Length: 239
Image 1 (cartoon, rainbow, N blue to C red):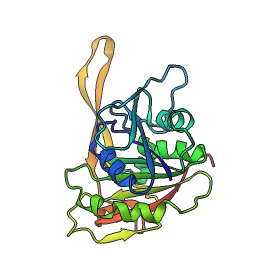
Image 2: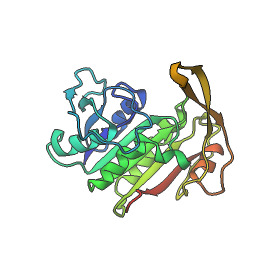
Image 3: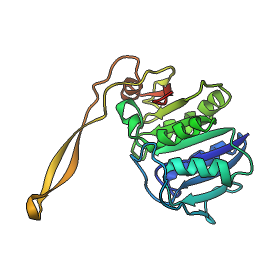
């Protein structure tokens, strides 16, 4: 199996390194990831500027073909699959993102955006995310199992698997819930604070997110709040 891995946290992120180590057990791995943080870039791609890609000489997973890119995660999928890899990938893995990508946050997520670009290109795509914390026990326990179950699942055009691992201890995790619907809720309810009044009547704003756990039954959001690994199918808008 030919596997392309990207993310939106950058080539040096812990999540992409851990994912590459496990993905090696399933096939030949290429990593093409942004050179730095690209969170909330959604499904954006570069059209009017150049894209620079360099080999990553010190990527810490032996046997992986790794590159870093000046563009977006979507660019990484496009150039990675069309130019960097000798053949098109059988599957694209996007992640493991530092922070959940579920509920309404999916529309902003560059982790999911890269997976949607993969689906648009005709590749099997899986987005993977985990809690924004230092506890990775659940991810590291279930990652192999989840990949082994999803890698060979045939998806309809435009569909991706979206996986979220709860950021809790293994003893607190209640297992895996599949076929989770996308919640209409949100982890953070945003407002904007004025940080500074600027010259000529302007204001400088900063987002202020209030944490929220109000989630509907049988959704991805509810699963994560309740301490389950959430697996669901998500359809790209426009298909």
